[in-house]
Amino acid sequence: MNKNRILANRESSEWVVGQGVFDYGLLDVLEFMKVDLVHLLEEEGRFRGVVKCFAHSMDEAYEKIWNDPELTDDNSLEIYGRILYLFKPTLLQEHKRLKQKRLSPADSLIVIIHKMLDIIVQTPENGKGLRTLKKVIGKLFDNIKNNSKNDPLFRFSETIRIYKDCGVIGKHRLDRIDFCRAEPEKEVMQVKSMTKLEQCQGKIMEIDL
Image 1 (cartoon, one colour):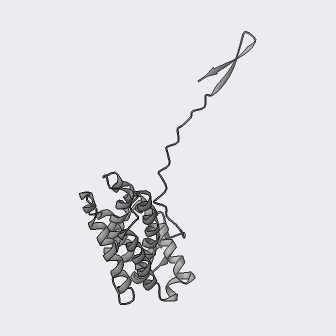
Image 2 (cartoon, helix red, strand yellow):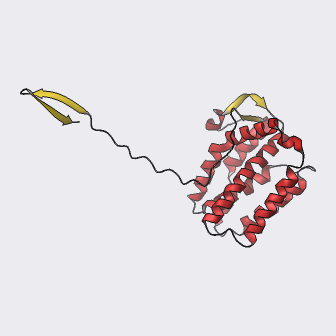
Image 3 (tube, rainbow, N blue to C red):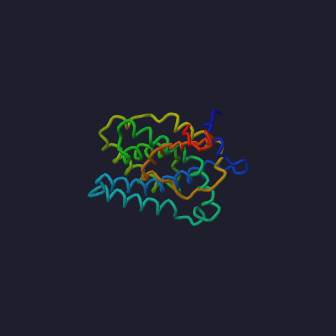
């Protein structure tokens, strides 16, 4: 099993969950991503008309998905938060990579969500809500004109499948992921001049190295 090195360092050595639970964890991650998607669409001036209706449909879909109280009890939320913690680096990395292929921030997120929905198994319990999510994201995906949307995201999807198959989750819980925050500017390294004091002819002179 060829694991991502960064994610391997974020694994819990104590928690292992079934694939069904893992799928609900992925759905929880997607709900966080949906919130950021709305913000990005607003920033790009695209959150209007039918797109607003799509967002409302996604909210309704999640109401159907979380209709069982056991899916949102404290233990379940702990697991979902650990799955988010595990995948945060690769999610942000893929988002950045897709933006470099000239997809907008919102469209980059749509492409990632579209791929993740393909990995989640439909069951009688999540079926109706999951079908709605796939339909809505499918329409948003189809509306993207840039052919970079067809990036296979092979490494990304394979990484998720590997962890889903073995049931390993993160060693900490995370309650948010931020795709909206602008990438921080690289800090300009201000090398402070080191001062060497030398005595020359009885006087102190400051020399910048």
